[in-house]
Image (cartoon, rainbow, N blue to C red; front, side):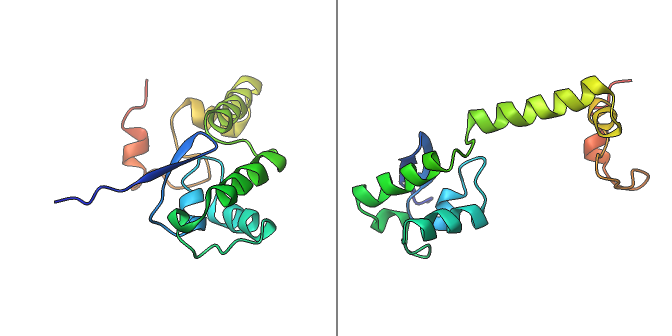
Length: 123
C-alpha cells in the first residue's frame, strides 16, 4: 500500500509536507534547492526541518520571501521560459534552430544518443 503524502500550498503550488523544507520548496517550478536554502536562510529558518513542522506564520514568511525576491514561479516561470525559446527560434539563432528541429541544444552528439529527443522529429 502506498502511504498518502500530505501536501501544503506554498504560493499556490502544492508541495510535499513530509520532506525537508528546502527539498519541498524546490518542488515549485522556478525554485531550485540552492535558492530554497537561500530563502530559508533569509527568514532564519532551518532548511533541514520538515515543512509540516513549521507554523502558519513561518509558512507565510516563506511565501513573503518568495514574493519579495520577485522570483518567477509556476506558470509565470514556464511562460517566460517558453517566450525565451520562441524568441531564439524567431531570430534564427543556432540554439533556436536546434529547438525548432527538436534536436539536442547543448552540443550533445546525436549519432548514438538522443534517440528519445529525435524520435518525434518532424521532417
